[in-house]
Length: 222
Image 1 (cartoon, rainbow, N blue to C red):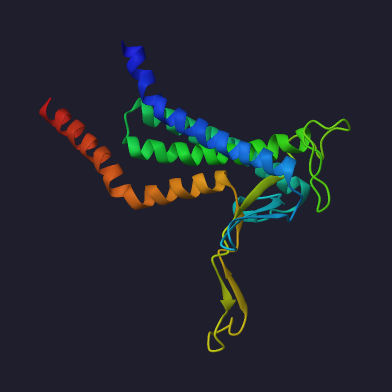
Image 2: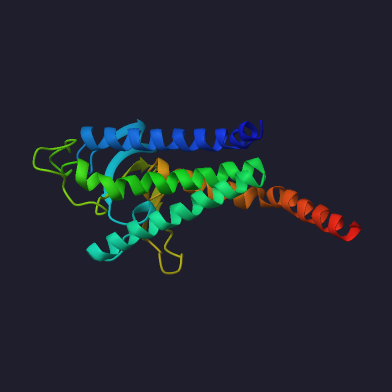
């Protein structure tokens, strides 16, 4: 009975992680095999496009110095995701707020999704270019080595485009685009997880505060 109850707390977080990873990897593999770099598919006119790019570095296309930087970043990500995974196990075991656990599961899934790209994609795919689509498990081997893969991004929402008014300091008259970054499902999961924790932190941590208060009162009464 105790074992069954212990496992019960893991069902929803594991299901959520599995779902995010499946959608993230399925979308990336489809894009990699069916699109060339820079190619667009319009989903909602010019406001939502599938736009294929790859990046060597961090979320939303940020870069991080050279080959060693890429290796360091991948290894750092792996260490970080192990830390988040352990934290998730600890939170389930100690019955933290379920909403908080699911948000941390989203962050974990997103981090793991991008780790899969940077760890394995260089080995299992041929290179995507502006003219050629990638192949899965190519005869000549992948485009890179283990831990040196590129992260696949494809979600692009150029919602508002125009020029800053001339009176705006620094950017007067310059072209602007919102939302400029191209990202993926994994980035989205991390962002949503962090946003929800910030939004609901009072209700999440109220429960922990009450738990500590009741434990303290028990100690005083004893």
